[in-house]
Each structure stands twice: as structure tokens, then as C-alpha cells.
Image 1 (cartoon, rainbow, N blue to C red):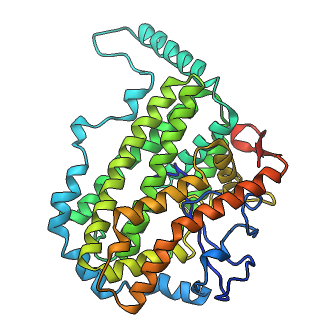
Image 2 (image 1 turned 90 degrees about the vertical axis):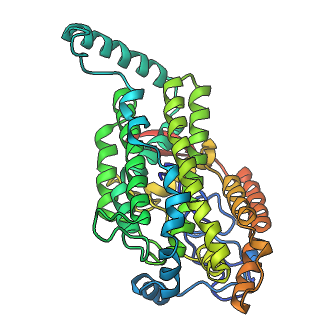
Image 3 (image 1 turned 45 degrees about the vertical axis):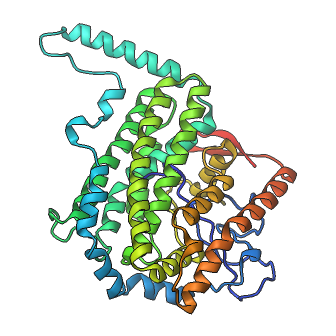
Length: 417
């Protein structure tokens, strides 16, 4: 997972149900922005009144949905797909024996038994680190900030597995269940676990970042946790997973490209191999969502619309380095990612359009009245997001750049739009 890709989301809402154009409460997931970049300004949320009128659930309703059991029909449907998961999702997980490991992309610190002496191994390790640091020296600070933010998000994997195990119908109820859904969750976790390990070690060896501040940020994020709108709903969980994995894939691809442009081929390769994992994981969640749209189109389109309009938080939203100022660390991180081109509003628009097309939402038939309203809402989102993007760019072009410091890079400044 990772933002590592900024895992943000634009939430389109108008609490009054009117198109007054006034800012209303919003949620992040997969669309990066910041208060100065947005068209409708709020402290940590933005919306498009043009995308309304829709009604955002009240806070009391949010709390009720977070604590209530998942609809029984959803649970029964996903449980009935265990055989399908075994045939269509589990093959996407690679055998451990043929999988890459973080060690494969970093200097080896140990002497190979019988092949080299301790002095030779130390010399080779020192040379490898020097080569890595020479490549990392050319990476701009804004790319480093994005890389650290992505790594911090990846390192909060325990929170994400815990969230998966709260989802009714697909959770690993025993901790070692042989059911396909449980095997997918554990296999996904095992593959994702390598991402934070690899990025962490690269950053440590690069000498470019304050690792104690980075580690403090991971510590804070794990203590703070994360929230999901309806964490026990399997429909919401797999939709969320599809969006998150694609956003993470996009983010790592862009980071790899930037690293290569600035001469760090080692980092480009690291981000590329992580992106390949995210692409496979995206395929799994996308496939199961498509299957659920076949089995229960009305339930899935209503769930998709709810996710799109609701207050859904991104995994790294609660990150902190203990030095937050008027803007949160996450706000500043996402603003840097937008300006650096690591993950942008345009990427989010492409992402929504991709899934609406992939799941053939416009072609769904036999829907209830609520289902048809949800279908209409979702299908109208991509062009509205494009309009919001254009307005945001116009506003950003008129804004002055401003510096923001990050403890991750020894309080050096990067420019925000």
C-alpha cells in the first residue's frame, strides 16, 4: 500500500444539499491538495459544490456506521467468493522463494562464507554505500520529502492489517486461517512489508535525511492509527483497497522517474520494483470489485458512491513528527507531492475515471432508485473533477510560493504552491 503514494481523496460534498459554492466539510483519501491549492478553502478538506447536491453523512451517522456491523448480505456475498478468490486473487501473490527481498537492492554488509574475508566484505560494503550515497546526492529535497512520506505510510502496515481484520467476511479470524480471503490478507501483508523495509534502509544509507525524526514520525503514526468510514464493510474495504493500490502505484512510478532524471538509478530501481508489487495488488482488488459488481451491482454502486462522497481518511493523515505548526505535517507533505508531480489532482481524476470505466458503472442495470442515483452521481464525477482541477491550477498560478521546513531533511525548506 503506501502513499507511499499519497493516499488521499477528494470528497465532494455539500452539507446543505445546495449548490451554493460555499466550502463544506471534506475528507482526504486519494487526491492530494492543500488549503492554498484548493478551490474551496477549508483547513484540511476541500470540495466542489458543483459536484453536489449530495448529502454528506453527519458526524453522528459516521460514528454509528463505524461501530455498526456490516450488512449481512454483504458478508454473505463475500464469504461465498472464497473459491473465486483462490482462483483469481491468490495467484497474484508470488511464491516466497522467487520473490525479491530488500537485501537484493542494497549493499551487502556480510562476508559470504568461504568467498571473502571480513576486511574484503567491509571494503565492498563501504564501496557500495559510497556509490549509493553518490547517487542519492543529486535527489532534490522535495523528492526526498515525498519519499520519506511514502516510507512512513508504508511503515504503518500493522494498522492496515488490523483494519483488514476488522472487515467482516474477509478477516483472518484465527490468525492462521486457511480460507482464501485470510490467505490473501496475510500474503498481501507479507509482500507489502518489504516496501517500508527497503525504503527505510535506503534512506538510512543515503545520509540525506534525519532518520531519528523519520522514525519518530513512524512511531507517532502507529500510535495515532487511522480511520475508515465503514471499516467493517467488505464492499467499502475492497473499493478502498483498489483506489489505494492504484494511487500508490502511480506515486512510486513518478518517484522512480524523478529519481532517474536526477541520476539516482538505485532509487529508480527500488521505486520501480515496489510499484510492480502495487500493480499486482491493485489487480487483485480491482478484480474482486468487478466480480462484486456482477453479483450485487446495486450494493456495490451504492457503496462506491458512499466512499466517493464520504469522509474517508488517508492512511498517513495522522502522521506527525511532534513539531506540527499551523498546517499539519500531512498537509505539507501532500502539497509537496502535488508540486513535485509525485501525485497530483490530475492523477486522481484519471484514477476515478479509470475505475468508473473498468467496472462499467455506466452500464449497470436493474438498480434500485437509490442505486440509480448513486450510479448517476459516480458517473458525473470525472468531468467535475476535471473542472475542479482546472480551477485549482488557475488559483495556484496566482498564488505566491512559500517555504516550508521539514524535520525529515534537517529543517531545510522546500517551496509550496
